[in-house]
Structures are given as structure tokens and as C-alpha cells.
Length: 571
Image (cartoon, rainbow, N blue to C red; front, side):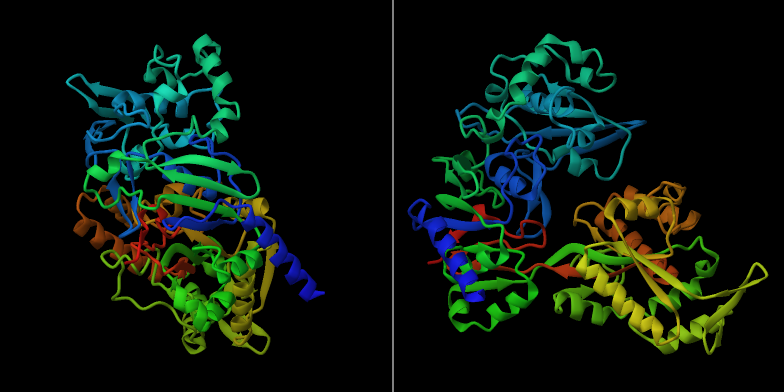
């Protein structure tokens, strides 16, 4: 039966690839695990769409996967940011070389038009609308049509990233009748009820919300180096390199469109994708399961043609302890629990060693900000025992006891996690086994996703495991750790913090230099490790394969983990 199943996979794989365009020498074939629901640059929701849209459209700023740094794309340089009372002014200038597909220049008018689309009612833009809510208006430079200033409400550290991290749309293609031009951007900031009856806006929405703006290559033409040639649903999407693309004239190494053709093959099944890779029908495959990745490493024929990569990701697994509960209120008890976290075994069992232990919330690969003078917690029952005794717990044959408010309480732990997450479930089981060695009962409680989040916000938990996603650009940890978010319904679930740590978080957000930010971030890691309330255990590694006929692959921990536009043929 299994042989028949493998035969069917091979047959359908062969049939699928036989229907592909003829392979060109300067062509890259990559796998899409899921097909995009839409390629509309405003209302897309999935990573597959984001990867493709980055090859069609551009933002003012973007991450360069060569070094995971935020760099100018359409912008000439990083923005100038000025704080004036409760207003922040963010000034950009667009590169003079930047042009649309018809050869016309990208200007401040296009940025203003884009912001109107992102903020307007009646449009399918609910996903991205909150991201630009802080931008109230745009003031163009009367002497330079490429220069403009964004008028923003108050200030947060993420403003630099968010002010430049959305795809700029060509007004001439998306609004050929100039329907939005008479409506000022400032009108989209406060009450939108009047705009809902605006005839121009209603006419624009009627056109914008149709499939034409979801899959039509004639409309989906941005300023990036590729055009959408063909989309065969359920099979593949083909992108072609623009001829004489303006980005080639800038000298900027993060502006690339090197392969002549990029084919994104839709392969939902992992086994089918691996078979396609082994048959050399794919040039790139990411998210390779750890077991299969280890098998590829020992396949001599495969290694002759492919390079394997394991970049440090910005996704971590952490545990949170409810410090509001009397039994977890003292630091020594929480530290004892930390010494029962068998992180090495977590990594071995759930990640097959493709992860890196960490001392805190900053990834270890961010060396400037990571506190390498600290040591992470490791499994140590002896230290855990001594800490429990020092905090007043008494060990008996059936467990540990301590008086709380005049009543004797037994030390038990309920571990909560999202149901269906095998990595987290295995982590919880390993912790349960470690705690059992000290005779501490641990009950595992798998919860449906929405219920899990609800209980976190309602502080109805004892200890949880979950994943944490970050990036190397923003370090505003206030929503997770500031005491102003620790009230019922807030996002500081664990109750971490005091006035000193609040000040530390504020100093991180206000730091004007990387050296100053590094000092505060390292101190935050020290305090978090000592408090043992919010413990980041390890950062995961990605696993991908890329054909070795390509150079300049820019492998990164940031999704999609490689920059296909930068690929060059090996000489």
C-alpha cells in the first residue's frame, strides 16, 4: 500500500512538472506550501503572497536579508525623525531613479494615494489599516515632488519601521480616473462616516474590491524588478524579470532582480516537496522537517548539488509563570522552577538540536544586544531543591508544602498550552517528568487557541509554554513586560515588573544610539533572568536547501529565509 502511495505521489509530481513552462538556464524554481488567496498588495494575509508581492512591489524601507538590517528601498535613505510635543514628523525622499512600469517616476503623490487606500472605509483593508493609523497626514515638499513628511501622532520606537513598511501603489494603475485625488489624506484619519457616502470613494471601492486587483498581472505592476506573467491556480505562479529595471542603476546591493524567471510551484504536501527537491525539480525548499533534513545531510548525491542552511530564526519558545499567585510570588520559587526546565532536552526532542539556548528575550545572534555574560538556566534538581527550601517550602514524602495566609498549601503546577502544538506539548511533557523527580505534581492542560489566549488575558493560568515571534529591528517589549499592561485583560500576562523595570523599558524605547540601547537591553535580560517570571528558553533555527548553481543567496532567519531576487548563477 505504501509503495502504491509513493507511486501516486511520483505520478502526480511528474504530471504537475510536465505542465510547467520549459526550464530556462537563468531560472529559479521554489516551492509554495500554500497558494496565495490574493496578490492584492493591500489585503493579502499569507506569507506566500507576501513573498511574491515583494518581487512585484516595493516599500520605502525593507530588511536586507544579507545582514537582517533595515535599509532604504524606494526611499533614498533612512527617514529623518523629529519629535515635537505630541507630534512626530517623519521625512522621506524617494530615490530619483525609482520608476513605475510605464517609466513614470514614483513620487510623494503615490505615497499619499497608497495611504488613502490603506486607511479608507469600504475597502478590504482591515488587516493593514491599524498599522498606519498613527499617520495622520502627508505634507509634500513644494520644491521636490519626491520628498514628503508624514505627520504622526505621538511617538513609539516602531514608527521608523511601520512608516516605511507597506507596499507603495502606482496611482495611475489603481486609480486611473483620479477618484481619490480630491479627498485629502487628513480626511481619512478621524471620523470616516462622512466618507462612506462619498461618491468618488464608493466608485473607487467598487472597482478596487473586484478580482481584477487580486490576480491580474496587467494591474499588479509595482516598482520592483518583476512582473506577474502567469498564475495557474493550484499549480504555479511565474514571474518575469523587467528589462532595463531602474534598480540596476542605483548601486544598492539590496535592490536586485537577477534571475530572468522565477517559478513558484504550489506543493502543499511535504513528502511531495521533498521528492521534487531530490529529483532536482526544485531549486529551493524551506521549512524542511528536522528528521528529513538530517537525512539529506548524509545523502552524498544530494550534497553534490545542494547547499543546506540553518540560519538563526527570530522565533523562540518561552515559559510564563503567573507571579500574582501566592505560591509563585517569591523569586526563589520561580527560580527553582526554572532549574527544572530541561532546555537541552527540549531542543533535542522537539528540534533535533536545531535551536540555540538563550538567556533572554534578545536572540543570541544579535551580538551587540545579547548579554553573553549571563548563563541560561539548565536542569539542576539540586539547585531547585535548595531554592525551594530557602523560600519556606518543606519537603515531605508526598511533596512540598508551605503555609500561605495561615493555610498549608501543596506545591503543584498546572501547565497550559495551545492544543495541537506538538512541539509545545512535548516540552510540557518533558517538564512534567523533570518536576516529578522532585515529587512536584504537574498537570498538563491543552486548550483550544482562543480559550488559551482568553485565559492568559484573564490571568487564569499558573504556568504556560508558547512561542514568541520577533525581529531584529524593534525592541519595544512594553506590551509584554510593562506594568501598565498587567491589569486584567492586558498583555503582560505574567505580572512581571515594577517601577524600575518600567523605567528600563522606557529607556530602551527612548535610546537614540545603538550603544545606549545595548546597555539597557542587556540589563533587561539580566533582570528577567533573575526574576524568572518570563523565561525565554531557546531560539529556533530554520532549515532550507538551495541548489549550489546559485550564489548570492542571502540566507536569513527572517522569512522567507532567502532572497530569490538576489540569486546569481555560479561561475
